[in-house]
Length: 64
Ligand SMILES: [Zn+2]
Image (cartoon, rainbow, N blue to C red; front, side):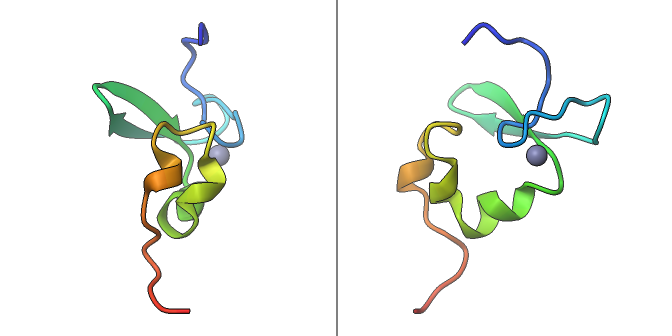
């Protein structure tokens, strides 16, 4: 990973295009835009490969 620009880890839009929310994770920072944040909240497994540890995160939704 050599990309230093702040960009949404999911849709790759930059802070020039959308407001970005900083995620503190594993001693570093990642960024995510508000449009993609629900994915992190409800379906973090969809971010596997983009967000470290996403595959082991629990979704906020319970049941079913
Ligand atoms: Zn995004």
